[in-house]
Length: 117
Image (tube, rainbow, N blue to C red; front, top):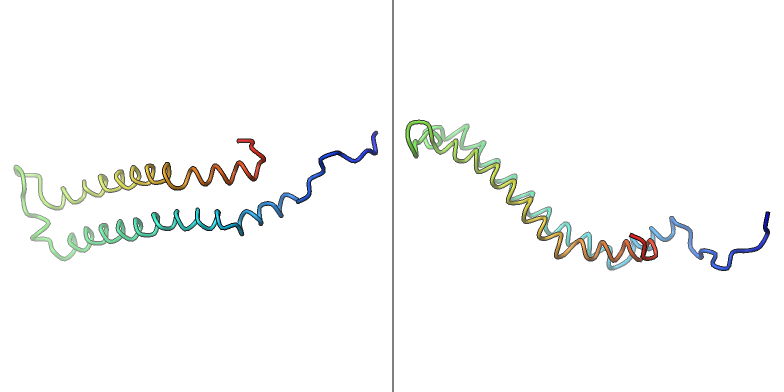
């Protein structure tokens, strides 16, 4: 058993390092960037969904308007567009994260772990 002190003793404990990162301007910017996308998209999607539900409940004549053939009406198209908008938002988030969020998160993680990824 050795009583030698390691040459590179850590100066900060792990919880202190995480708290320092949390307080950093870079981390605050990362959270701001994430919120800048997530909150507006959540509100937009909720309003779009609420419009669909409200129209389905209170504008039945409009929603039952036939568009193509005998079975394709406005309600069906709006319902399918809910899926399209969900995938569109996921794709937009993926692009946004690649450009704005992931580089900063990778840099913070690298600084926190000492370059280990």
